[in-house]
Image (cartoon, rainbow, N blue to C red; front, side, top):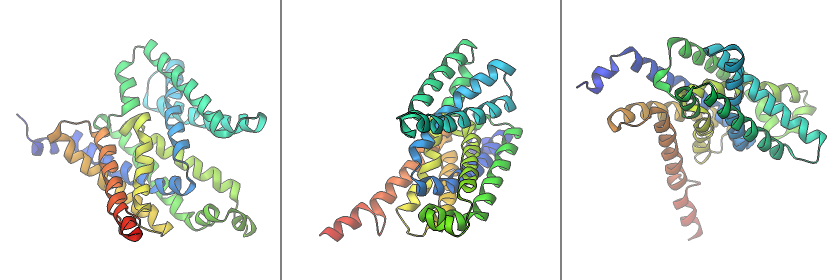
Length: 282
């Protein structure tokens, strides 16, 4: 019977641990932007919209790493831009339009993948399989993580002005529309990089929970980015070490651990925690 130490010596364990660290940090870093913009539900919608793009790509050009990546990007853009188009050309608001588009597309993606007899792959894309990541997957995750962190760090000052005072940002010459598109593109890329790690359904947790936890602990907007990255990385790595002895899925354990971190911050935060608010009322 193999021990955990034996498992850690295997290449698959090293890849999984590295993926947890990189994907956890990148998603946690970007989650600050999501929390500050209050876009958690939109991210959840976009994460579900990745599946139909993958399904169409597999149907048209076959199953490969790059076809899945291209299909996911295409689907996210279509649903995101399509919801904007529908909201501007009808009485519907963007959230309503996005809700109709992503549920229809998601259902279509499930039907396509079932007809292609890709049940195992369907489960991986829905719920993640970070243990199954290959070296090429790791390099893609590393590239996307590096691009996301560098881009958001470079744009942090104008980004914060834009998030809190969009009118002032425009008056200062900040290219608001370009900044909006750039940050949206980065968010989509990071969301796609976490697809294999935690799947379409759970990816919103990895993209929201880290910064949401830090948000309960600090008023400093800049701290949200690095704090979210650190929380995301620590939570993902902790989940890796917990999942083996417990016999749990690493992907699901990551979200559970981040949820526990959030709950602890909600209850015990010195300034915004449940207990501190009760003391203030008393």
